[in-house]
Image (cartoon, rainbow, N blue to C red; front, side, top):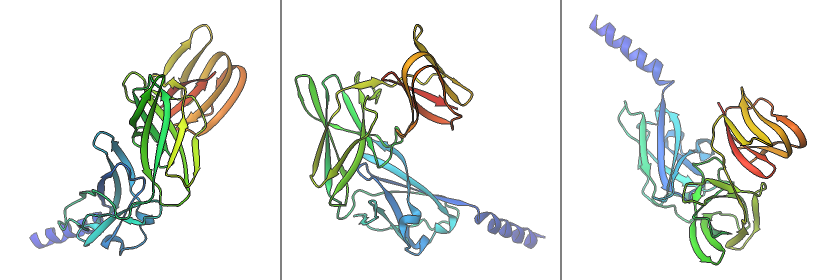
Length: 294
């Protein structure tokens, strides 16, 4: 009877292990834009199939966390390493890691302090109004907020302007970047966003690119109903749609990645199509507000 019990338990373990996942999380410098893993678990195969997703960024500590779920067979499969860059060309400077050899383990957390042969740095400088106390940049490495927002460093302050800077790494000789800027005018985290709806872009070989971001609009509070101006128009979310009621000149709807979904002009009312759950930015006559679809 006892032998049958252990046999049954062993078969259950075999049956469930094929569905189990092993979670790998990696802490890396916040300048890391893409992160990959390769090792014994995939026979040192192409890491393109094991790209880790950005989980969070700690601007104060200067680190980012990436994560991935792997088959449970990763456990005890020998060494592995973390790579960075759009073509995973940059291996960790730290010694290779060893997988946890405990059969019951389902997670492993590792830290990479730096990468070998860092790609060419490019410094992003932006001139903003002197009222900006904190400046952040998001871009082609990930538009999702707040995880992908990189806190910029104040370089200088003169008269009515300030200059903030952030350095990213791009291997290619010709840099091709697209970014947007966020600001905290009152010292709070990215309470404001640039009024320019298009991305700031740069394509060239210089090690520094400079932009001027003269105006920021407040990002509205994410209440389901926001009265913007009772005498002019109001914004509401009903079911999975965003509505603007009242006279307006222009309405433009964006997703959280900054991609335009719809734009219309000179109407008395606007109703979007059904939207997927998430955060949206709606711009009415040049002013931007957040709306959440649940």
